[in-house]
Length: 524
View 1 (tube, rainbow, N blue to C red):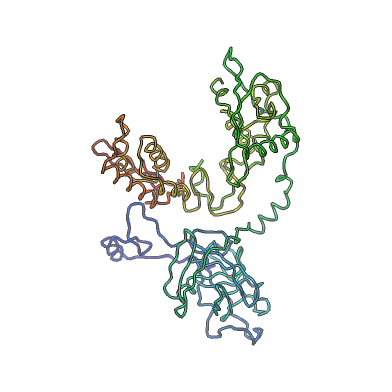
View 2: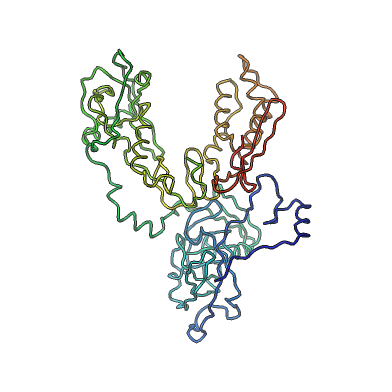
């Protein structure tokens, strides 16, 4: 079994790299928090020669290429079909057949799905993958006609079974087209062929599809994704509402609702009445209803229980590479409220008075009740391969958005949407606006080295009762925007490995960096 190549450096080479300030593992400049940029590859080595007698003579193969000498580097994005910020996916054609094409700078060569090229009848060749698994290589087709952006390319492709794409265009093709301009924030790739400009942009329809094994698992359990019907069963985690002694009933008059909200509110109330989640009420308690728009454009039916309320995990993911998120359908509504307390959570709309029989949105301790129920339900799996949190369902992906962060096998990064909000924040003209900006940047302070020092000209302004913007404040405002935009990816802690703490203190500022293997985990 072949082993992964080991890079060996002599003492003189180590000294040369140290003197030049270069990383021992890659050719980039080394600095505190440096992370080697090349992605992790699967090393593929062709082991078996073709049987020339069984190879069809009409194949576009190159007989001069010795497949035993070729080392293919295939990224996990290409092999498993996982999306990545450094890939670009779009529609194209092989002859007249529509295919999904993945441009992946993490793959050394071009790959074509064997099922696309079955008419070529290439013989199968065993391939050893660097992680010890075997996949089949069906050979090399040296002249695949691939069309996109109304331009025909003849591209050599290895025939390998991959997931999530039909064609992978790797470094081999990227080098062949000459200078390129890439913007992976869109994502978009631009280049020229015979002075003809070509721009490729990510196809909005190229959505991520789960691995076939995951898809089969989901199809076998479709019942768990169905809309819940009726009241949930009584459970140990039914919600109780304990008020302060001698508290008088809360009764708040409803808002004047926008006309556009009234139809939505009526529809939601009818659905909850039909499902048995609410009933008409004669309770002396009454709270306000609010509609809060979801990310998908639908509405959360929330109740403003603030007047009533007055009276009453990243660090675990250090070794994870593949992630899933599970959202319970109407999760709160699957928790019963103790029958003796339902009258306390009555609410009033413009057309009626109702009370919940299940846990509503808006109660101050509702999240803890729900969290407790989930912890109890998933107790056998907690801290092994399950963390409980709430968002839309995603299965078997290399990265997920979670509470303002992007979590991946590479580590923890700020959510690009939140970074855009910081970048677009206007220069403050009041203490309120300044507090809002500082609150948003403080949320990401663990990504920012020397945050307190950088922000001190802005925090100094909060010590005065009147707002007076200064030149130093403008500089600090600009610098904070810049460092948040270029914030490093923080590695997730591995508690089986030693930690390093770097400290610094001067004047009135104290700071520290917690890291492992020269990769920062957090800045203090």
